[in-house]
Length: 186
Image (cartoon, rainbow, N blue to C red; front, side):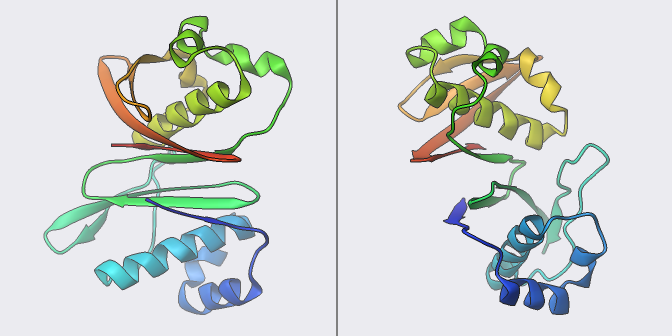
């Protein structure tokens, strides 16, 4: 997993991306999305000599890229100030959120039981649950509305948790680096 602070778009990065990956400027990507994809592509090129497109299916699930005789799975996330991406040999998902207070009614998307497991209903725990569930959404390509059917089952260590959705259990690592929370599928 890689993450870094992102204060503003870099015109140099965007120009380099436009020269090297013209397809990034053909879609409806924001400059932030273009730049995080550029960083991911730079990493893929440096580590795996991969230099092609990144595609998603109709539900927004990233399609694996072929590397030698196997596949690499990828996922990315960004906010106004931070970006994160992950590349793995097994299917994965990642989400990054900035911890900030909002209308308190949004906290009700998660169950009281889930908040109890984490030690209470507060903004930190709201975003821990949100980012973990969003990483599942990115893994399987469902919708954010499906979060209501995802449930925290247990926390096995300080930053590893298990969530259920349907018949599946997902193992997720969550990292807090104030003010961001990053969760990814293990």
